[in-house]
Length: 226
Image (cartoon, rainbow, N blue to C red):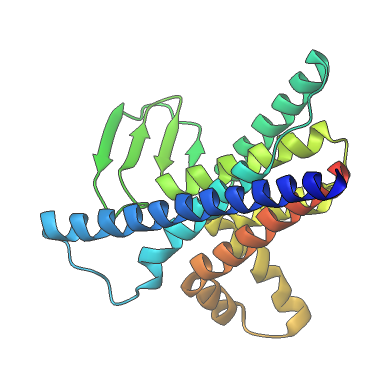
């Protein structure tokens, strides 16, 4: 009886792994097709910095991977409401700090523009008005939304994920410069040099920290569930 139960569990896990593998193969193939189609159907030419074409999919895939693996713990209506409020506040902060969203300025004309860039970078939505300002890059919005979902799941678990949650604040590309520049006083290096380096490697740094944050929040959730 025990052998049969273990066998069924093993077969079930193998089938899940196969479905997962098929899912990611389809995702990667679709992303590759979108890139090829974009450059084939437009006058755009691939950048020599290939990593800039890859980073959007790294963010999207990491966020998708985490959302598929994390299942928020059922809680009371009040508990869920608190989790939603905290997750929304978190999402607002990580979008507001780099200027992805913001408040408009008095006298600013209302304007909406949509630019078709390489998949992940586009379609980029730029909106300005006297009360609201948006600069939405798809892969950044999706990546930060996945972090907010992980924060929500951790809040429901009542875990102390303060560190991993706060770390998400610096995943925003625009945050890497103000975060790194204060280190000049400690390192004794020239401020201009460090700032220039931070800008040059901002997407690299932001991507690494984003992946680290996804891992920490996912680990925190799994640890609390176990």
